[in-house]
Length: 246
Image (tube, rainbow, N blue to C red; front, side, top):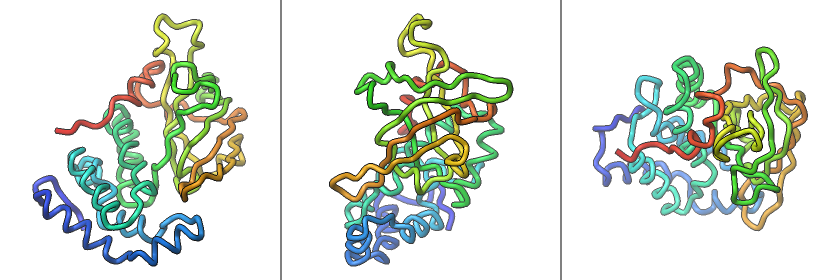
């Protein structure tokens, strides 16, 4: 079912999400939690109903809703007793691609994300040696012909094992060579399918709650140059520039 911006008041939007969530009772979520699993059936239902494509513009097969409406969707999932953490990554990843991706990238990925044929639920930014200062990340993406070669390490990267695509922030210019420390970082779309045979190592991190998160190691992972989002060196700005609430 396709939803458009004028379809709902907030109360109607809430009831629509609640109706879906009622299909997944506490026993479902308890079983998922007990098995430390991923709520595959719930995410699939949310995708088919169009709720996970809330922030994707209608022209690319999404619902074209606002940030406020997307927040209502996440709120209602949690209010129902579910866990929006299993699927909210697709919401906040949309801003980077929708606002800064090329037309070619948007037409290539967004319709398939909206339909559920692809999942973009993971973002690799945090590094163990950078702490809260993202400008000090050490993962590099070095241009080589028609691709970039990625080396480095990320940590607390969630939903990698349940995503087809990932947003990656890496340094394309050394920190010592930029005028402002916030410059010289770039954003890429990484195709996770088969990446573990091409130089990506994924190590799950066991944590106290059922939240699938991982440590990533990049060893000469090739990323096509066409997967660079926006301009080289402006990646941190793109990551921080979230979707509009209007």
